[in-house]
Structures are given as structure tokens and as C-alpha cells.
Length: 290
Image (cartoon, rainbow, N blue to C red; front, top):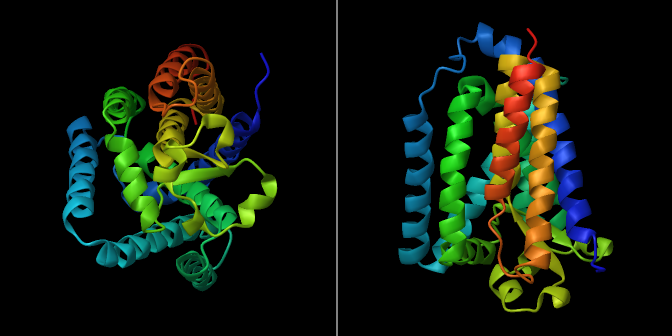
């Protein structure tokens, strides 16, 4: 059976780049975290669960009740700040403070006023890599692994009952899409982000879609787990855990293509299962002191 490899190659490439960057940031920021007194992998599971589901509820309520004309500006500024923060965390490692702040501000403003598909994907990758390193330091591998499995169940239910697609559609209307956009044609990476509407994509046949959407959490959560594994068990274990996460990510696209015939697919369940397998292997056979 022949099928296009576009989404597979896009997603795997982004995951590999994000994993490399996140582990690089983790390796270089680890000493700074310790000096700054950041708690090392001691944050409880309930904290991240409350934070995540509270954020989901707040966003859903805001999207449902607040008029679109106000949402457009609120979410755009939130995303611009998030992207600027990610750029600052990464650039802080090799630039003076003032240069890192300047670069972060420029990137945030560029996305705010000149949001292209390629710029959005790049800044989202950097932000998720930075978040992966930070959350990996404050949460232990088992804490985050259990969190991923719980969120995988939520992801399945949210996609099954249309909540995830509804939320993504609403956010895409504000040009604040918390997801990667993979165009069918490489030249389309130069398109403005506001031309990508999730609601339109879901109504098109799979082979007619010009873009594939991959949720940021499907990249960000395995990054956080891999960074956490790095701090607890070393680089080799982190790389193996991340590699299994990539297998799970590509597997989600295979399931969507062959069994779901292009219908929305919750990618986190196969990612979480494969990440768990990789983590168990890595922690038992590749664990090494940092």
C-alpha cells in the first residue's frame, strides 16, 4: 500500500530536533537550576495535574463565553510571550543577558505581527524544548510518566468526543494555534498562519488536505519526560526514551492513515505507551550517574 510520507517525515524531524535541543538545554541549565535553588524532581503529581486541567477548563470557558474579537488579541499576546520566553531560555546559554532579552523580544514581536507557518513551527519547537528542560528538572521520571498516561486517556476522550478539535479550531481562528502545522507542499511553509483553519481541515478528505496538524503536547510531553530521565539516569537513557517516543509518534500517523482513514487521531496514547517502554528499558539498563 502506497501512501505519502510527508507527515511522518515532518513529525519525526521536528521531534528529533526538539529532543536534541531540549537535552542540550537541560545539560547546560542543570547547574544553574541547582545554584538557583530550583527544587530537583520533587514536585508532586497532583500539582501538575491541577495545573494542566485548570488550564484546560479556563481556556475552554474563555473560548466559549468571550467574544472572538477580544480573544484574538488576548491569546496572541499570550503566545507571543510564551515564544519569547522559550527563545530567552535557549539563547541565555550562549548570549549575554541583554542580547538574550533582545532576541527574545524580537522573536515574540515577529510572531505577533508576522506569523508565518515556518516561524510559528520554529518558535513552538524552541518553546517546547525549553519547557521540556525546565519541567524535566522539577518532576521525577515516574511522576511525569504517570502524568503522561493520565493525559493520554484525556487526549483519547477529548478527540473522541470532539472537544480537542473544537478547541483547536477556536484557537486557530485567533491565529494562536498550540500545534505544529505541516504543509503538504514545502513551499507552503511561507504562508501566513491565519490561512490554516482546523475546522476547514477536518471537513476535507484526508488526501485533499493541504496541511497536517500535530498538537504541541504530542511533542512537548515526551520532551519533558526525556529531560526528566536525563537528570535522573543520564544522557543515554534520555535519548533511548526519546527515541521510543518518536516511534510512538510515527505510529500514531500510521494508525490514522491505515485504520482511521484520516480522521482525527489522539497521538499521545501511542506516544505515552512507547515512551513508557523506552523509559523502563533505559532506567534498568542504561542508567548512569550525571
